Length: 434
Image (cartoon, rainbow, N blue to C red; front, side, top):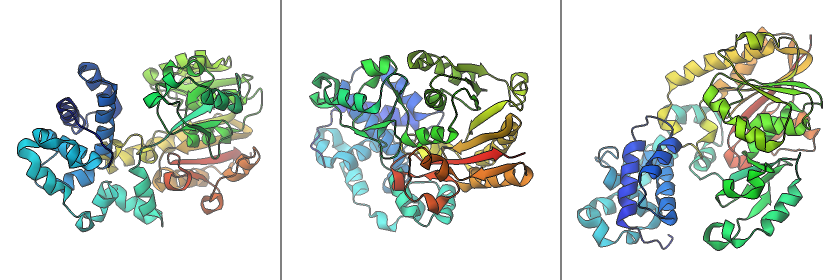
């Protein structure tokens, strides 16, 4: 246990925040942002304690509920805050003044033997997700354990403006004022992506010149590899079908050296608006953001049969991102999964109409569930005999990228937290042959 002294303000702030988060009325990061804007009592260190405890409570909510026994964390957020802080930092970090009449309940919670808890509780996931992952993966236990860990911060170097060695050298020479605790963050090359840098610490990156002038962007290494699967040639016509805030759009544009044209499409205009500032920093001139009403939008139909590469980052459960978005597993259920698989199939079919002969689709999700991944692609191929699978490993090896255990998942790209230390990603490369 680390030596931390918890203040009353931290307990009160965490209790209030948990009271919000446990309603599951929206994404935890947005609720947390609103909470800290409203609660100005805390200094940076105390805010960090609250934020980390809140995210840990979401990652390990099943066991928190279990050890609190008859006390519901939603109805007893103050006790939940004490238990969470005690199991993170030790009960000594609270002291008798903070514990007061709750000491017996907190000590009782900490004494619970998790060996007797149901398997899904020990895995820290709802039963439906536990059952699906356990059936699908022989190393499911290792995956569950990885999903309870905090994710690192990955950056993608914008090769239009610099290279990875230059950015790594800049990190080494960064002034001590930029890192936590007076030390610059440790920056290392990512394991697979040739453009990636991993930070174990999480500094205020948006204040840094390298971020402000577009030399780096935040993007998980797995997501960088999905963008690499597009493998566009210079001058290509590319569609990012579910572009969102444009992480993959920017990565693909950098690969194309700002030649050709990329259409960044999304039905969520608000999300797509997030691409604007990033695009301005990037220096790319070949990206055209387009907010569409649906996959059948007339602006989509105009592109039919003209596109060299379509990237479909399909709406999904987000089950591969639970390290970053732990509340998702409690806000999502099988009825929503069923709805999304219909959307995924529809979007993939719509994307097929855009591709010209010899062109490719990269279908991707940040899910670890086969029902959103292999099943969607297999059903599509059964309906579309004019498309064929291209082994994902071959596409990456052509760029000098070799992925551990690639053959285990071939012909798909599958990235998993416990194997690759990335978010969970799936991707398939489909080529139009006729």
